[in-house]
Image 1 (tube, rainbow, N blue to C red):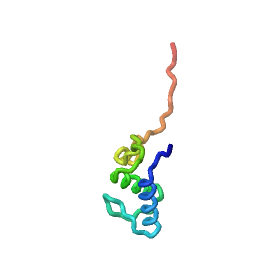
Image 2: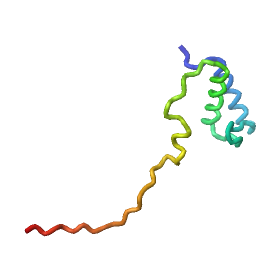
Image 3: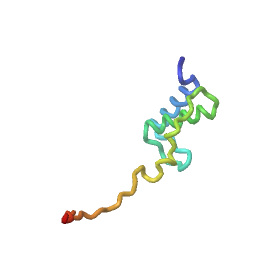
Image 4: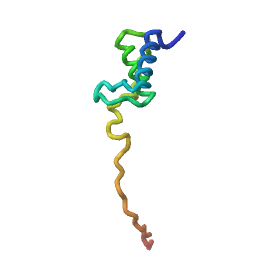
Length: 88
């Protein structure tokens, strides 16, 4: 049984075509979309809104989750020489 319906395939195809022509724009910022993956995501999102057969979005794919750059802030450590305590 196919995961995606015909409506989803059509929406993704249209989004990819717009990307190739350079007319596909991001919804929130309005910037030009250059990434293939982003174009597919936009097409699937449009298909979901149109009621097409599309699997639910993965929980970890939220863009808000990696808003901080995806890296932890590393603390700068200074190198210290460890000295052994003299046992008595």
